[in-house]
Image (cartoon, rainbow, N blue to C red; front, side, top):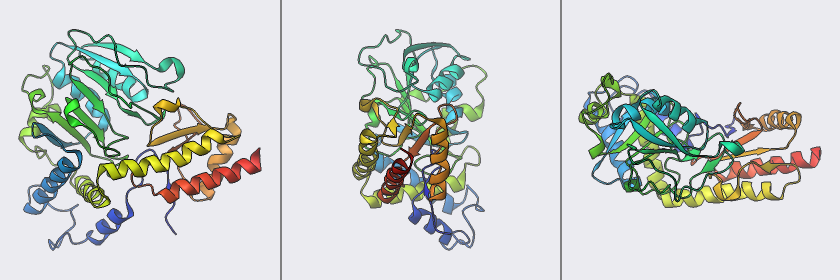
Length: 360
């Protein structure tokens, strides 16, 4: 069977070159006579894998020297607790609520201190990003938290909030490495890799060194303490070794493609094709305010639940997989991450045109 176009929001499409390379090395990685799945995380071979992965990520994102890169487990959702456990010195934090994941993160943080929801777009089903140029930042807030790209709702912060010198913490799970980013604007930037970088099971945390301290909330487990992982260079316990290996291959692929400026241009081209069609379609319509549209996740609807279901069924038959919208919002969603080729977006638009013709 030939490969389908996979529009899943995560776990999501990976570059074919990476999958082929991993397949070739499955039984024998680099002359070791074993798979990366089988090797000790303390071995010289794996040490080289994780160190190269970190070096390539630092180069891709131009990560300043005073930031640590951590390869952790537990997904982005575990960071919802780990962040307040490590950063809530005053037990106060400001959260900007632009979707379900920010909402869940705020709910988790509220177990450890006071959470101020200082801006929200919930009043319009998270279909826009609120103006954050002058928001009421709490004087005693330890940090300001955002989910930068909202996978479910298809919105993206095009400008970072004015945190008035407070530490910015951002979940970038679904826009990780999709465009250049100024890491120095964040205190902590993190993301689960299963959307745009690798297989499920790894979360990457990029954290400024001054935020890594032994002064964590009482009762914080060792496994949820940034300092312990930073001091052990992500090898405090057995890491998600094979996942890190695949991430490393994706970093190499991104460098070969030309880096994040090139990826941004590619992603803009794909997204433009899809949004341009939605904007003139008589059947489909996008659900997000134009200025806040994500390059990664494109939600759309017909306005008729039965027609939406028919579209999802027929698109699957046409080799376009995972276009059903998130269960909380319905409709459709096309996730067009870095590894989705332009041809995938073309195939989707061609199918939508055909479906529109047959169902108007």
